[in-house]
Structures are given as C-alpha cells and as structure tokens.
Length: 400
Image (cartoon, rainbow, N blue to C red; front, top):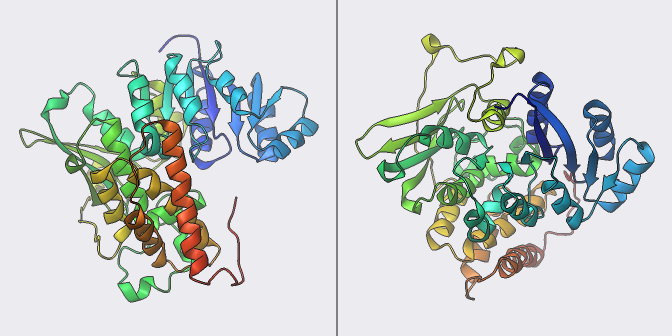
C-alpha cells in the first residue's frame, strides 16, 4: 500500500456495513482518509460523521434530509442528486469507492466508478444480482472489484493466486438464521421481532429477515455466479452454525480451501481496503482472533423445503434473464409486508413464488429494461398482498 493514505468515498456511511468500514478508518488513520460520505436520510448521524472525519463533501439522497443536514452544519457542501453521486465516485481525489448501501439506486454510480478505474469494494448485492450484465464487463483489473460481504470476500481470498479453470465448486456458508431448528408449524408463528434477532450477525432489518428465510443466501448465490464467473451448478450453500467458516472452494483435485475468522464485518472490510496487504487488527482489540485449539466447525445441508426462498433463488439463478430482478423486487415488498405484519413469515416465499411463476415476458436487453422488470416484481408482489385482503390489519412499521 502507498505511504499516502488511501482516499475513500463511502456510499452507505450510516448503515451497519458502513459503520464497519468507518471502524477500520478510525483504527488506521495513517492508511485511510474519508473524502466523501454518502447515505440516504440519517441527517443526525451524518452530521456526527462529518465532524469526526472532516470529509470534503457529504451527500444524502433524500432531499428533505439533505436540507436538514445543511441546517445542522456548514463545514462541507451537501449533495443529493444522482448526478452528484456520479460526481463523487469519479472525483479525482478518490482512490477507492466503497458501496455499502442496499438497493439499486447506486448502480449507475458503480458503473461510473469502474469506468473511472477506481478501486471498488462492494457490499451491494442488488447491483450485481440485477445488473451484472451491465456492470461486470466494466471491471478493468482483477483487483479492481473487491467483495465486501463476508462470504464473497472469503471466496475472493481463497481464489487469489488460483487458476479459475481448476475451481470445481464453491460453498457460501450460512449460519442458518434464528429458525434453523424450527419445523413448519413453528415457522407459521414467527413474528418480526423473532426474525430480527439474528444469533450471530448484527444487521439491518431487510437483510435480517432475508437471513431468517435463507433468501439472503440465495441472492448471494446469484451474486457469486457473476462475481466469480461460475455456472449456477458450481455455487452452493451450506449451513455453518456460528459462521466461523465464511466460504469454501473445492478444486478439481479434490482439495478444499476455506477462509475462517471471527464473524465480524470489519475483517472483510479490512481485507478489501488493504489489498494486497494485510492489517494488524490488534488496533481493534474487541475483535477476538480464533483459537485453533478450540476451533470446532460443523456443516449441514440447508433444508430447502423448510426454507423455500433458497430454492426459489436457485431457480432464478438457473433461469437468469428477468428472474433475478423479479426475485429481488418481490422479496423486497414481501419482507416489508411481513415487517408491517401484513403477511406471515411463511407467506413471504408464497408471494415471491407467485410473482416468478406468473412472468411470461421477454428477458431484458438493457439496464433500463432490467430496472423496469425489478419494479414489475415489486408491483406484482404488492398486488398479491392487496388481493389477500390483509392490508387493513393494524401495522407496526420497522422502516429505517
């Protein structure tokens, strides 16, 4: 790594992954410098971050929140539009762009960052799952796009220095979520409060529910296909309670290579930001290193009948075309409806399945068509939920 600090634009600065990235920047100020901070609408937290990291600019993509931030501080200019975001990620003072936000709003900014030859760390699944045909061809160097999710980061580390032709298959690990030992009857009574209580990871609302249904692992399978240029039959999921092993690669000679670490997103962030070097994380004493002598690891196959969201995602991976976008759109709406107590936990998969099975149109030919299909998945899911007659129930919102 250069003696000069790596200059970073952080998209999704107020979220859980963004917080992990900022912890690394705090611990190694001589190596990393925050130049731009971007988030959606948390003006109060953004104001605190501005005063701590002193960037040259900040952005909130919610216009009302951006206006609030301008009243809270005058230290830096506040941006808000899509054009502003593209300006930030291509800024000449930026070396590395971290995409730690969720959703599809940053796809065009990701494209611009890659075209500008910026190093990119990516924790935004939707950008790849929905738009891979229009994103992956823009990657100019083998080290330019660095996965930030723990599982994909683990596979990325395992593949370094290896010939892709020798890869037989990869395994993305899952903790199994809070309901790994439940039966079908117990799952029918799962509440949002129960589903948000993940046993290992501290995550946002949407990804916590996706982890509980195993949809998160299914979406990660699609993402891994595109990130590592693999067939859907080469990407598999396996349950690893405790999430000590994050990813496994099986090579053609039968050798297994796996990456194991304490389940902490800061480790993946450190690896992506510091590549090709490594950081001494003694600067973060709260991260306890694994002890080889007490390490016990077990793997189990996921139950796709009990957690059909995983099977639905794998089928979307097989079909490709419009189906990953439909899946993401329908899941987004179904999870939101569950959090609002409009549908039950087990109905999440039923909504998604009906959206996928009802589509009989053509595959997208452009990114714009792909985004239209994504919205179509959302609208179809909303229509199904409305038709179920459950929208009149008293709601409890878990919106951020």
